Amino acid sequence: MENYIKQLKWSIIKILSNLSFAIILLTVILFLSILSTIIEQNRNLEFYKETYSQSLFNNKLIAWQLIITLGLNHMASNYWFILLLILLAISLITCTFVNQIPIFKIAKTWSLLKTKKKYQNFNFFTNRHYYTFQHYEFSYAYKGLIGRLAPMIVHLSIVLILSGSMIGYTQGFIAQEFIPKGEMFHIQNIIDVGPIANVPQNLTGKVHDFFIQYENKRISQYFSNISLLNDSNLTLAYKSIFVNQPLTYKNITIYQTDWNLLGLRIQSYNSNKLQIFLQKINDQNLWISTIRNPKNPQEEFSLLLFDLTGDLLLYDKQNYNIKFINLNITGQLVNQLQLNHKIAYYNRPFKVIDIMTSTGLQIKSDPGIILVYIGFLLLIISTIFSYLSYSQLWISRHNSNNQYQGITNRAIIYFEKECSQMLKSL
Image (cartoon, rainbow, N blue to C red; front, side, top):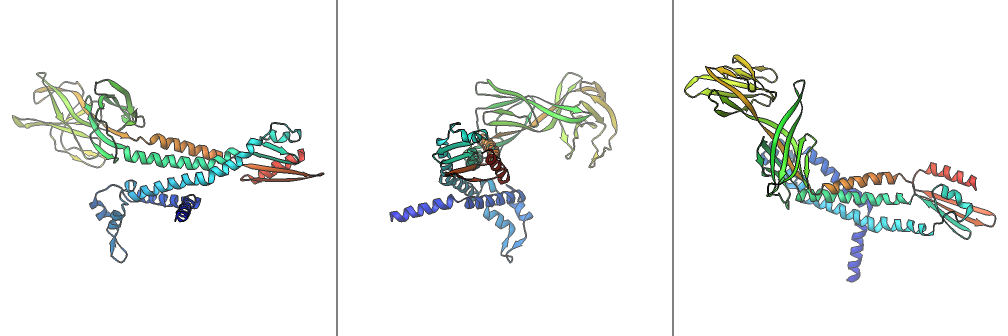
């Protein structure tokens, strides 16, 4: 029984350490990853029923049923997809310890026997960066041992990338917030969260300012000045963020994603201030707000604006029709004004003193991202190492005859030329 268990363990180790098995697993994972980009992820059930309603296998199975049953609609959190990733990591680790490390040790044993120009006849080996060993009439030389590290570094990099991705999935979260300028916020609107993620509740943010940079009346960039504070109201981080320049604090990253106009602050003739709501028209950069006199419904006008430059249009009524590109507003244009520009309408003076804005922030935590970065860095290094040839030379003397043998794992033509030059030197 004990021998059977040992044989079974060794059989499992042989399968896991087989490079072909790892390649098959990687191919399956790549296929499923491609499939997840084709099939929309994390949609509701009705979406899949409407989109994938065709019948399969002689009308016995419908496509959306297959997608839901196999979990193809949430591939990243699919348990059997995660098991495939874990199995691939175990296979690469086993292959490294069972195959790659012993091969490297065998190659490395020769480095313990290297000499430094001890034998004058083999100085050309040193000049060509070979390590040499000589014992009586037998000589050995090699170079490029570091190239033997490339497969192990590749395995390590893939394991780190998979581990970082798993940590990010299980412990990470994504939140989306729309915060008015000048307001405080907490991480509340969670749109995706890992099963063991810890969303910090002792962290407070504040949007100090939001502004847009224009070039030729077109948006060039938009910025948010934000800070993070702790429970004692002490500032932990502060930054003016914009697209592709987020604020990072520990494992939390805050990205600038969107913006919107909320309303207008208006000051009346008697210095009273009121806030009126702005409504966005369709998906175009056009906002409108209508002001009515509650005592006289006939006294009504609308304010329209297209951006944050401060230019406003005053129309005498709200009857408008928005086309796809051209705007056709049937109301009569009364005046064009700017911020803090006094105007009187229906014998009531007022001025718009501020445009109320909100900034769209994406708050993301990915504790495993550093492992992913290290993994890709090692993958780049291993690619460089893989181009280094591991070459070996053997020389044996028999009376007045010398026998030469050589082998390399790549760049064979270059190795043949190198050997030919060294033989001429001899």
